[in-house]
Length: 296
Image 1 (cartoon, one colour):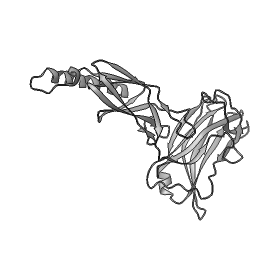
Image 2 (image 1 turned 180 degrees about the horizontal axis):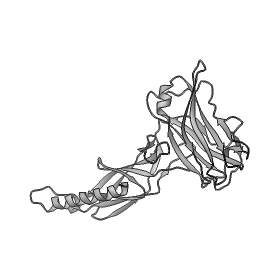
Image 3 (image 1 turned 45 degrees about the horizontal axis):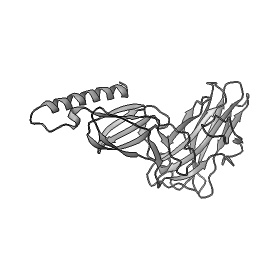
Image 4 (image 1 turned 120 degrees about the horizontal axis):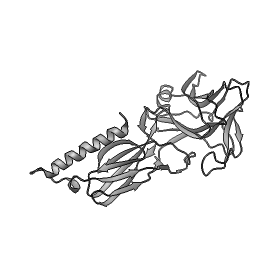
């Protein structure tokens, strides 16, 4: 059953129960006589907050609360019925696909919810909200690559100046590129952190965000993305979390490395991309706004 169908059925049942309560003698008064107000949620965005990569995002879901009552999670765009009159205090949070997997939908832990009040709401009234999410002030980062001056990666990845101006709307900047020839089958690149830049999460969350695309439309190209931990004694542990088959349009993904980092305390961590090409033609993999975020 789809989320939209579950929501429609749940809303219908809730409204029927509210109407029964409204007409039953001896029951308390129901807000607006059981007729809801509606909140239309679509077109969310991310505030800059000093972190790169906030011009492009992927926020498929929204979590909604009204007057401290949890109204659930929804796929956007959505119109949520709310049984309330007077002022309704709203809390709206952004949801993502964890590790790019549609079945792993979670509230993204690094964004502060959008809070606002629907004032003097009347029965049947429709409000529209375009949420703006901010990163929490205590979010830490160990990798922050916008590729405007350097890649931060090894020489396998190079800069492309002003990569197709339509790369990310509003930007004519640079990005990192891994180029594979027609005869290359594998080529990778490794992000090297500054010396001693270990990540300590104390059991809290750590996610890697980045934008990506390929130069063509071949379905025979892909890349792995992972995190490498190196201890002070030189022990190396790799965690490849996802294989991505990119398209010719920019996309964004959010990868959860919380467990891996927590299990490898004391390591220096590096992001790596490994490209694969079975197309028989040259291909470029583009990367932009790579950042590893975590709570301490």
